[in-house]
Length: 551
Image (tube, rainbow, N blue to C red; front, side, top):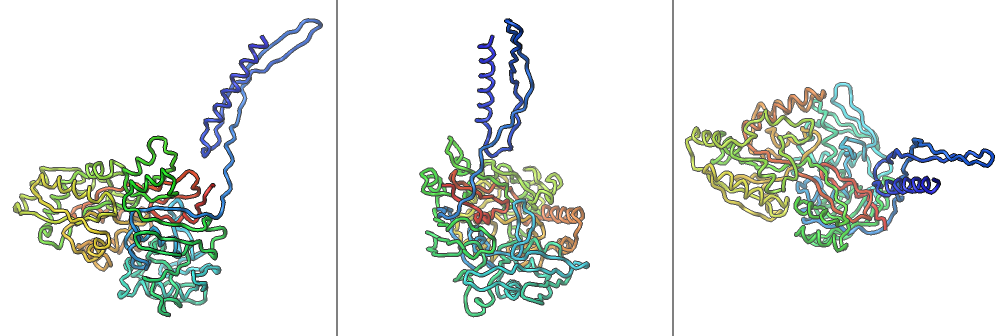
């Protein structure tokens, strides 16, 4: 009997141990219910009475302790595309953002939950009428050259952005700023022409990074010399080869960055990047191609893959100012002839979802309420007939590197449109050439990956308002959309704002200046010893400042 009881106890103990061993180390400590056999021995004279009873007990599994973050070490990183320039106010390429956001800081930023939080500004407050925004700056911030950052630098930076001669990429986001005052070194007061509740969200962009007034006014060209306040500074840059970053030892966030530096290697073929990860010659990689992202986690690779839903969106931009697309019926026919899910499945292996024009989940309009979001070939042919059955031929411009899905998207769209008699030719261009032509609106049509943001004002105003600084890229104007965009900026109530932006999306879907396709995922692939990196839905790598090497 005793042997039997001992065997039961041993088996139950073994089961509990196996449960502990199988618990995921990063998951909350699970509570395991198990049955424990208690033995009681009662001695009466020379008779031994053995009794057993089953008692429910709770065994709490304790997870393995998390290692404390370490400092030092060089992170060897890889990406397929290098920066196209250094000036943070002028950049539009994601490849530039993903590095410059480590070198420069904006006044406010997005936290890990995509909420607007203080950054170089430690706090801010609005006036009752919503026309005055007062920001209080941190006092311990220095530029990489050692100069202290003050309110004069903030005033200078935004005046530079607002100056049309600068050619700033996000100028339209700040067009409502009437004047900027600096009552003291730590205070900046923005006075607006009309209320603009979206202004703090727009200030999270890299395109609003703070530059040194002293350095730039003294002749330092931001396009040639970087001098930010960020966690890292450039040590060496060999374009299209290697970019070395050193830790900013005077960074204003205590204990950051944890790495001593980052060495970015430009490797155009992402399959080769994956090979480097598997060979452990690369620690961390930015992956754009979903096919590579999927393969990275196959076969028990041991690599860590982060996969964050993106706010950036894939889109077919039609140039409504070109003869072949002047008639809205032709543009509508294009929209009706394209199966968006098919484009997603072919180009990104289904890694993503078809999207409305606004990609933040709260602001997305229901696709059933948007014109021809479901493929309808009969309607497409009728629209062409109503337009007089014109001969429609055009070129689809695509970048050959960003995103890597661009060519596949263009080819699939080309094949789908051919079924209704629309002919197209694909122009594959080097990224720098593509960006230059894209900014000039010099294309019939183009497949693009455009940036998203939690606030729709930042996504829409610069493209779709007639005064937007990227309206030339959109090539479309509508006075009614102008009015709605202006209303959206000054409306604070989320429900009312959603109604406004729903209306904007319906008008855009009806007019079809663009055909919105899908949103994908942001992939980062790294070795298991790379710790602390947090991906963001906007694709930002800012949390490389918290990354550390557990080796």
